[in-house]
Each structure stands twice: as structure tokens, then as C-alpha cells.
Figure 1: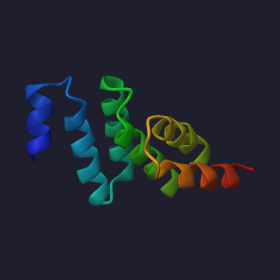
Figure 2 (figure 1 turned 90 degrees about the horizontal axis):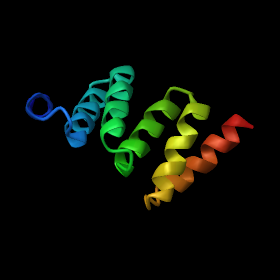
Figure 3 (figure 1 turned 60 degrees about the vertical axis):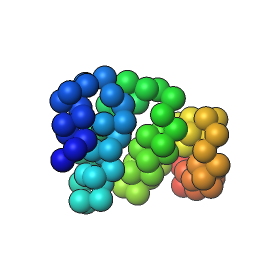
Length: 94
């Protein structure tokens, strides 16, 4: 897996962790993907796609309260798709 090699060569590379997370989520391993999205965000807290996809992974598992701040951040960073998920999370929490 090329992303694993990227992380091995540069452990500070947020996109490497993000890419691994996408692959794991596609393989039906959302819990592992969540950990890697968080790793990506530790390295780049402004990674809008990592916030969005972390929020989506959490929401798809019914963890709307945990997902909400990630959709909020993605929306603040300019990712328009996050606003729909913000509404869904707020609706599910209330």
C-alpha cells in the first residue's frame, strides 16, 4: 500500500494517514479508519477532508454527537457538503 510507505517515510505527513483511512473505510473497517483520520488531524488540524470523512465515519456508526464537531470544522474550513451533515447530526442529537 503506497500510503503506508508514505507514512513510513514521513510520519508527519497528514495525507498519508488520510489516504490509509480512506482505504480502510472502503474495506469496511471504519474503526481503524477513524483512528487514522485522527492521526491525520493531529498532523494537520485544518485538513478539511479528514474532518469531513471522520465525521461521516462516526455518523455512519450512529455516533452523531462525536461527528458534529468534525462537520462543524469542515464547514468552517469551506467544505460546503458538511452543512447537510451538520443538520442531520443536530437533528439526531435532539
